[in-house]
Amino acid sequence: MSLRPSTAPPIQDMPPPGGYKKIDMGRYLPDRGPKGWQLWLGATTLVLYGYYQVGKTNKARVQQQMQERKVRYALYPLLQAEADREYMERELANLRREAEIMKNVVDENGNKWVPGSSPFFGGQWMPRKIGHFMPKW
Image (tube, rainbow, N blue to C red; front, side, top):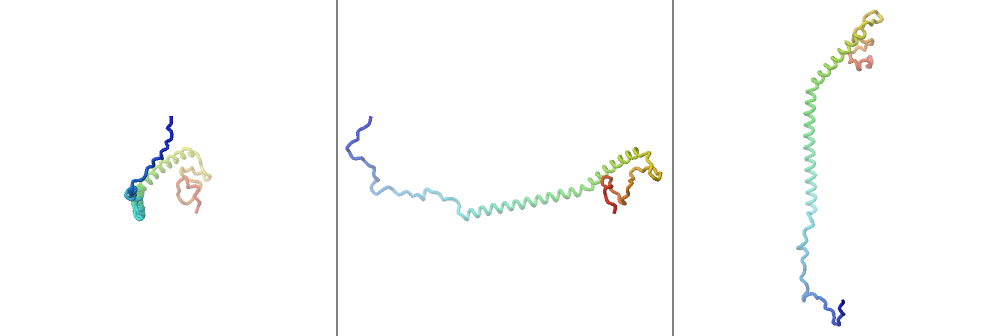
């Protein structure tokens, strides 16, 4: 059910006499953020601090590497002596095996085979693994 339109003129809301009060927008809006120079100062400070940390880390890493190198230099004679001892043990085992295998071999002059001797002479002692491949100088 709807109402019939009346013949009275429509009532319109109007502002109060003298108008509405002005709204102070500046009071309610905050600043838009830090100023440009403050942003530059903050970014520069962060970058400089980062470079400082990188430099500090690099110095510490170089010092650590130097200490590791000193330890390696101090241990090298011990490690080399151990490698030499292992080489000599393997060489003695090879010589015993060679003596067993070549016990009845005689060279062209009628001499018995000497374990460890080589038919080649390079003039300089080399470990067996590379000794035969070195040129004669």
